[in-house]
Image (cartoon, rainbow, N blue to C red; front, side, top):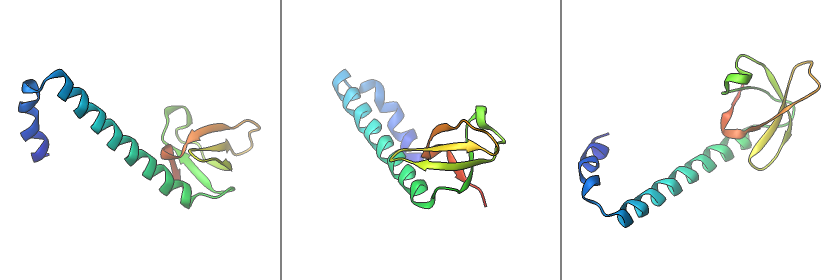
Length: 95
C-alpha cells in the first residue's frame, strides 16, 4: 500500500490525457489478472467436479460441473434439471 499512498497525491496534477492513459493501463492489468485466475481455475476443473460459487444467488449450494467452456462453466445443483453459466473466477473447487 505504500506505493499507492505515494501516487495518490500526484493524481490531481495529471492532465486528462495522462489520467486516461493511466486508467487504460490499470484496466489492462486487471483484465490480464482475471484471465490468469480464470485459466488456473479452469485447469483444475473437470466435468463432474463438485464446486461452490461466490455469488449470492448460489450461496451455500453444492454444484456439479456439467460443461467447461473457455471462460465459463455450466454448473447444476444436485437433483436439479436446469443449470447456470458461471464465470470460472467465481467457482471454488469443493474437496
